[in-house]
Image (cartoon, rainbow, N blue to C red; front, side, top):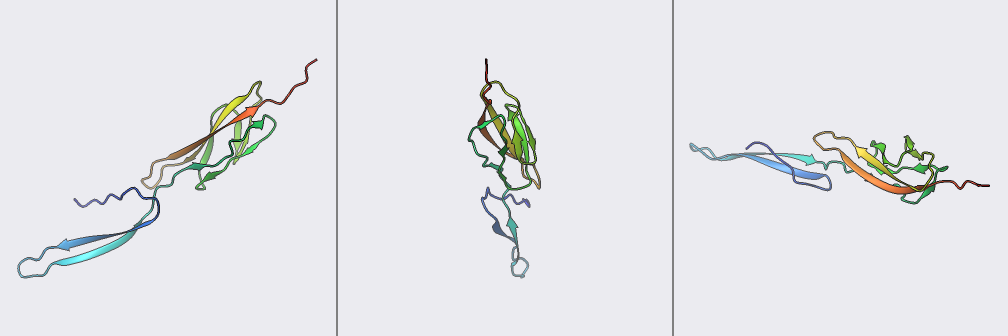
Length: 126
């Protein structure tokens, strides 16, 4: 028909579409080209360290492309900006953090998770 659907691409790709009117009634064929760039949909990447932390530490969250949002999927704690702060815990706790790039411009939302362990601070007992 008259709808172009791009291929799955990994980088910006130049596309040229040709419209042709066939030769008819003694007239030559006629063509017209249009060129445009197809850009790939963004893919969320979460490169936050998976190293364990203790409950009194924070963890810097690292994701790309910029502009995404952070959320705690499991394990508790809070996020402010790109800093994770663990909850008060009594035993080793597995925490999963998600980085999300929202759906936009015909692209679906994209998410990436990272999981690490939060360990409790030692408590002296008499």
